[in-house]
Amino acid sequence: MSILCANRFTPLQRRSVQRFGGIMLLTVATNFTNLNLPNFLFDIFPGLQQTLLHHQHPSPILLVLFSVVAMIPVLLAMWVAGNYLTSEPDEFIRSLVIRALLWGFAFTMAGVAVAGVFMNLYNRPFPLTILSADIFFISSALALRICLRSYR
Image (cartoon, rainbow, N blue to C red; front, top):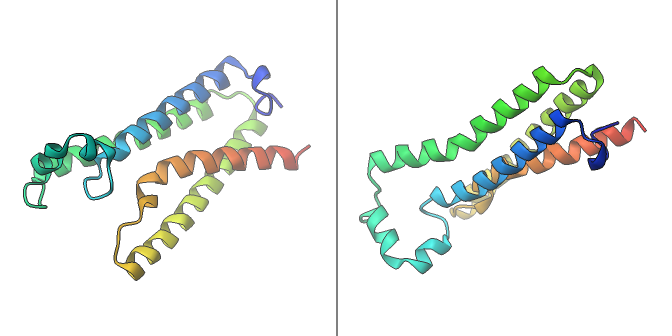
């Protein structure tokens, strides 16, 4: 199994893993677009929050811009996964990757549901919502390891 050991990656797998790593970093960077959660940039630049929020109501154009910025890593991840699945010649590895992506999606949706209950219960924003894409990437990678281990 070439996915199991990093030193035996095919060039396609290595390129896809590097792209997913870059997308994870981009996701972490775009997590700062949520204006209502704690943000260290507002601590460093106190006037930034006042400039962006304007009496706790950001402009609709700013909201659309931040929504598009937060959506970019998710779309890029779907593109990388689709590109990998169409290029992977081994059907067994392809089916394992699809199963891992489904498990990662299920784990992420369960986490978001639990976070939603906590947000409604305590009437406070829960930081897990900005980490959904990160949780998806990590849980999909762990699910892939578990799927590969089950075939050993």
